[in-house]
Length: 404
Image (cartoon, rainbow, N blue to C red; front, side, top):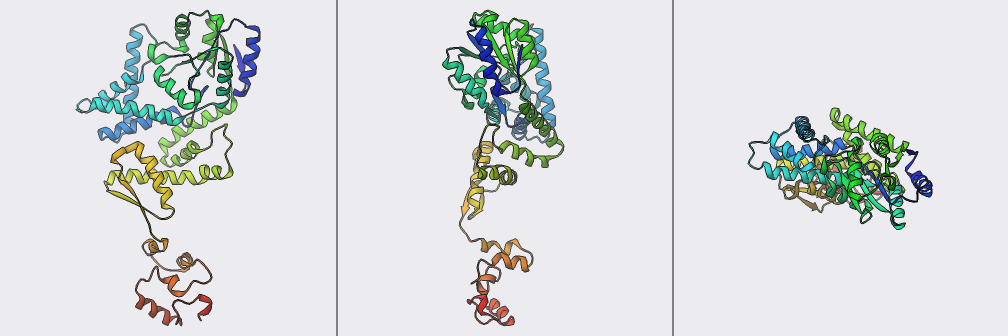
């Protein structure tokens, strides 16, 4: 078993192995946390799916639904073990059993189950992104004529995992894929490796497997005679630890969602963002995203017909509202309308008194006259002139510099 200290070092280590192993024809890759990385912990994806289910059945106990999800998985694991297989399951039967357990009397339970399956796949797609150094490595090996396969201990199944890989930049790079959920055979027990060797018609000495888990990707492959390369990227491990902490913290403190939104929107580990992108993602995006999420939920719950966004900043908020709300609620999302209007026209409704701060908000330049300054909050011209006379101002339209 070989180890690498960073993803960037894998190419060099692999080349040194291949130099003395000319019989290697196939390179196998772990998927999650190796080829594909996440913007949030898996627990967050699963809770997001539970929230979709909660809305579908009119429940508000997401923690209870998560417990029911775990119980459904335990039952499926027991069935697999009774059949002589490993403790694993595929997403579709898992979600159907989950929905059946919490909504047994709901006549729409079959439709809801399919919607839950689609939601989980969609959430995984949102959460995942390609690992740039590994993408370069895979392309290099493909160009050199190696047969490439992926091997994953995952409940999503081969079709869904391949779809995620394609979305993350690995389109048309893998010749085959093997996922534990399809066959209830795990890398962690070694049985998936035996399955792969049998299906591919390979000897163990013809394969190199690369992954990040010392047991499943390293030791179990080695026991079957497969050369393995385990990646121990310190920065990636620290990042996974932070994501795991966030996923637990938000359960006890919902306000932590702002921190998670910042991390989700932050540039990827191998991006080189501009200063403006950093400002937008780290400073502006989190509070705006949290505000819009709350607005979307409130609009749906209260059942309003339209949500108006006032010019000019409202155009960006309207786009965010639609980008966030449409995937979640579809046609049930209240219509977003861009309302053309002056910010000054909202001042009176937004204040409960008029003082120095409010006066400053109405002043745009040195030539602002009395009427321009107070007009937005005093709409009656007769009352405005009365106030002006009391202050010794005779010319309502003149500049401040021209009035006593």
